[in-house]
Image 1 (cartoon, rainbow, N blue to C red):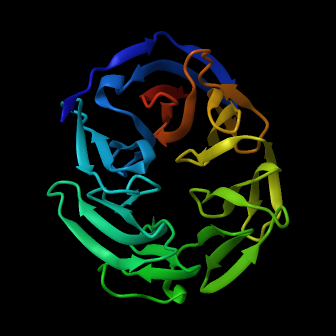
Image 2 (cartoon, helix red, strand yellow):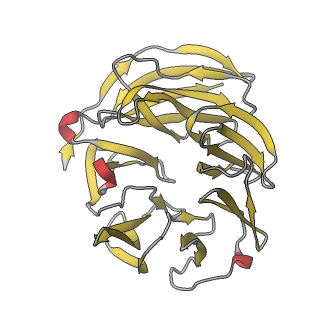
Amino acid sequence: MKKCFIYIFLFGFVTVNLFGQSVRIGETIQLTNKSDGYFMSPKISPDGKIFFSSQGYKGIFYLEKETKRIININDELGAGYEFTFSPDGKNVIYRSDRYINGLKYSTLKEQNLTTKEVRILQEESRHMDVPQVLNDGKIVYGIDDRLQILASDRVSKVDITLLNEPVVKAVNNEIIIYNNGIRRTVQPQGERYYVWTSLSPDKTKLLFYAVGKGTFISDLNGKILVELGDIRSPQWSPNGNWISYMLDEDDGEIVLSSDIKIISHDGKISHQITSTDQIKEIYPVWNDSNLVYADSDGIIYITYLIFE
């Protein structure tokens, strides 16, 4: 375990008016250093802990708030890719990958963050997608594009008719929506690849990026409500009023420039959160009303936002 030194990157506040709210952009704090290692893909647990992975999505780590130390949860291959949490924040759910003759096989696991005890939820399979955890504790994931639903007891499998909230997954060139016991597919922008797909906090709207077209908000029937433009890695704020994203450029291999912005859910107002020439900020996530993100050098930051 390594001590994490916190460095204040930006002092002072900038006040702007967004969507009828006054927003103060506060200090940006560097949470990790190069000497700690290369970290990426930050995520926030339900109890507000800041998690991240190492290069290549190997392992899961978190920043201990009281001691500012970086705690290693595991070093498993693939564990850091789209991991998620139990509703109480006490467990992390992830895929552990291994390769046999060039083919990937994944095992679904749950790990207690206090004891580090690991429990296998789904035996090793090919073509397993990332897990989602519902508000009632059910875990949903796909194997060969077939939805699997694990009850909150982590043993029983249940039918889609027992889902008490919508679930969305992007598969191939379509978005699959499971709602009220019915499986439907939508293609809001036609036959193209869909990524960064998520439901709004109130589960009534769909946010997605259509490759070659940009980011959109639709209803659950796929009807476009808002066009947000060519913005990457969009993420709903917890109250659904804002969407964070990165505005990046690359040459196909490396990031040439990238900054973090936010945009109102109606797409009318956006504001720059970072504007740096030397630092390339990528993949923001919300921590309450604040933004946590990495840079292309593997350093994790937080920028404080005050909405009034």
